[in-house]
Length: 210
Image (cartoon, rainbow, N blue to C red):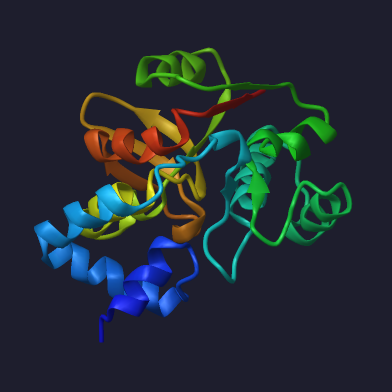
């Protein structure tokens, strides 16, 4: 049940995960309530540099798996267990996931060159791939896999928050094909407009590796 106390708790940033879900479900169904929350919620925003990429509350290894995939592309085979230990020991991997500015650190540790940039474009990614780079991007994982209406409400109420990483394999005007740790070894073709919307949550953060 949605009560005034739950709404107040949410606006103060103290709601439980279940209470937050209740709020988001109500906002998804009620445009006036959604507008009220967008106006009432503190507009603090989020600094993507301070964000984390993690596949979920119980799995913080999406960037480790992306970097393992990239290393394998360059003929470097290292187990997930070893990479996880290396990342944890260096404090690159935290309970919340990997800070965006640490994505690529494992690849650098194993001899690869790493470049990180914000405000990139699909054309920048396409050029990087043609130049022989492997490309990891940070984005909102729910926006490429979840309910678009739910994700739109979440962006309005909670703000844009990158929480996932994928390796871009190819891109054109219609689709972006990714290695997504959510899906294991099966590549995922994401409609280009949906990918761009999800990627925008990290201010179009790109990690180029070769």
